[in-house]
Each structure stands twice: as structure tokens, then as C-alpha cells.
Length: 80
Picture 1 (cartoon, helix red, strand yellow):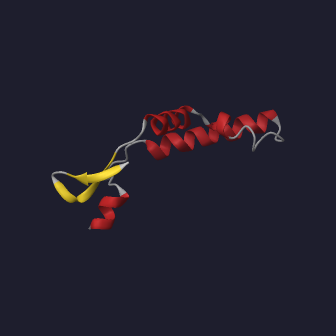
Picture 2: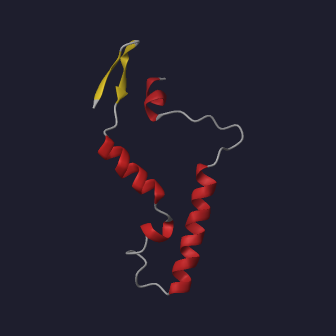
């Protein structure tokens, strides 16, 4: 659900429902092994573990803070 920001009518505030929050939390809690179990079902177990470990490491590198990085929302970039 969205509504205008009462402090600035140009911006939109989004309200996340409990169901959407729960779905997001469930997705966030999944690791690469769980998320790829169907896709990698035919892979050798050792290869599956190696791929999952590599993806977990990639995720760690992507989500950590990076020196000099300024994170902005896509909506904030569009308004610039």
C-alpha cells in the first residue's frame, strides 16, 4: 500500500503488509544451497556444494559495505 508522504507530497511512502514482510524474511533466510536445490538437482553432490559455497561467498562480497560507496534507492536516483 502506498500513500503520499505528509511531509513532502511528492514522495511516496510504502507500507509493507505482514504477508509481504514474511515472504521477504523467508527469502532472505534462504541460503544458496536451499535456493538452488531444484536447479542443481542433477549435479554431482560435490559440485553442488562447491557452487553453493561460491555463491554464498559472492553474496557476502556483494552485500557488504564498500569503501567510498554511497547507497541510494532507485527512486532517489530517478529524482536527481
